[in-house]
Image 1 (spheres, one colour):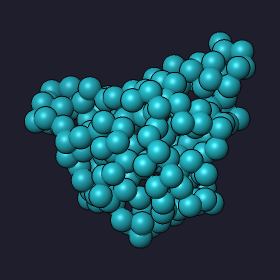
Image 2 (cartoon, chains in turn blue, cyan):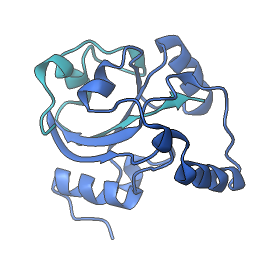
Image 3 (cartoon, chains in turn brown, purple):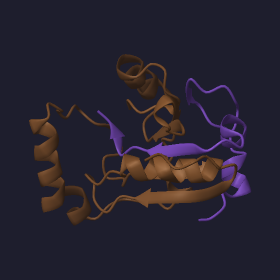
Length: 130
Length: 41
């Protein structure tokens, strides 16, 4: 959540599958300035093609390896709120147009931030960051 | 999906630090990264 427009990053809008109240509490403690939309009925998740993951996507070897790496870097796991069976994803949009997307292959698969910056620069007509 | 459908673009959204009533009003025309989280916590 540390990336920002100052880094050449696009504006961010998070979606989460928990309630408005749970989201307000979570982001209020960890990232008070970010925008976060609640989607407890999964309407937006479904519209963007994000659904429940398979056993392998949610708890396969790749997920454990990424989890161990995150743990080694000091990141823990709290009690989940929302729906931990949903698959995550990221979509770069300009207006209504989806110009780039990352559908996670497994629960620990995150988008490459350098790719996001390049795609955002291309979408805004700016020179691509090196 | 190449284009966000009307029903999603104009659907009311609720959450933290949102200044508009729908996704379309919230993001406008500037590039925006929508990040869908698995869960909180």
